Image 1 (cartoon, rainbow, N blue to C red):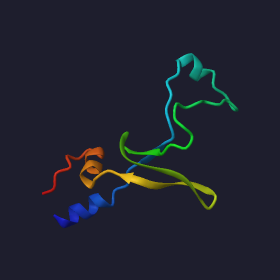
Image 2: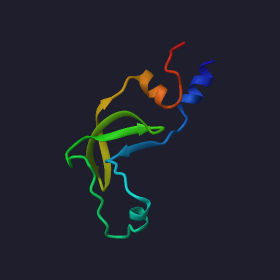
Image 3: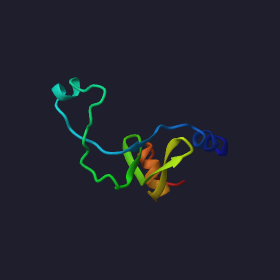
Image 4: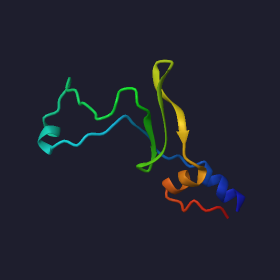
Length: 93
């Protein structure tokens, strides 16, 4: 049984960082092009949302890591909530 758990814990899952969101008409989406600026309905200094399986599991602040962006986690949900977000039931056996 421990081998099964070890295998599951080593699986890779997509982790998304959401800056913001906005609804647009299909016509407006089709008219987007290079140089277009989309205004998001979030303050520029608000935390970014950390998501797995399109479910929020935490939040954090944008940071620079070398030449890349990163996220410094300021809040993370419980392990049970994170398991639930990945499609599990969050119960411990």
